[in-house]
Length: 419
Image (cartoon, rainbow, N blue to C red; front, side, top):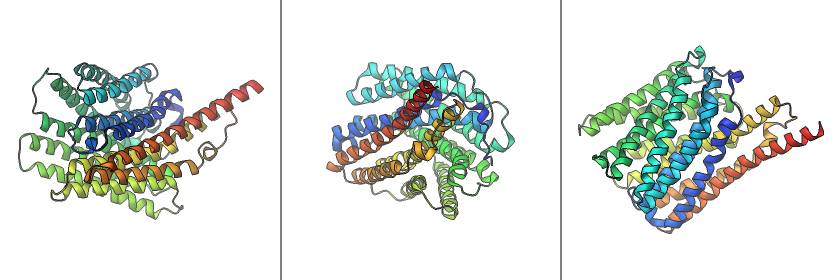
């Protein structure tokens, strides 16, 4: 597994930063929407407010964060050039942001024109993103990077499937096509969350956990086999589910085993590391613990509304926790790296982002996970409390990242004036 990165292929700072700095504010908007809608948004997964909140978190928060992370990581991990990205990234950013907002508005207010516009914008954003990433990932990469690159390729393929199904569902909502909407919505959610988010996080962890957490390296064979096995299980489940075959559970079981094994193995590496745990490690504990809980809830007998609980555990507990922890590492590092290469006398990464900042945000974020779980089980006033805490957590993340970027720009301007 590769730990040495090809920094000579690093894209310009503005390219990933516009995505990474925007991501938290979609989470804050989702939290405020939850405060406004209250218990209705946690009553059923099919409520308009629930759909709006879910897509602000998945397309807005996670979509922005993962697009920015991939545009940064693919060239430096694979050691390849990222063609077209500089010109297309503002278009992708604008279409993704606008599409996520319009889709949420369309769900919330039942506006067909919003859904049509959102479908066009989001389809365009993801087609361009997939084209940029696919061209880069199709190039020959460094041999040691192959496991991570292979996982990224599979995640991008899953994204293309999820987007295609999502566009078809949007077309159904405006009366353009006929679909078995309940079944295809479940398939869309599975490919978006497990195929895109899950496989991408798993693949990225093989690189970032050893690098930022100073753990032992993941076995090469594990890194090669887990993502395709997970995706293969998803394909098997999808076919069986749409055909209403009992063997669909073989695929679901394979996905559960892959994700559970990944979570356990990563936790073991984290607990065995020699360096003392810091706040970034706490995010990984929360993320991986939520992933294990997701697997347990999925496999347990019916008794609660598993869809809402699974959504909270997987989206907010697993994916958002991992992204929050990585953003607090990646953004200050990028600011420091580009500042150094611009000839500025930049303070260290720890000065750009003191550990006290993520400590506070982690407390708010962890509290939001607990409150959202409680609201999913017993809707009521807890939904508004959970939304308020989630909004504060995301706003704190957004302000912390923005202030670090602003402080670097001020420092660069001051040094330019002095020279």
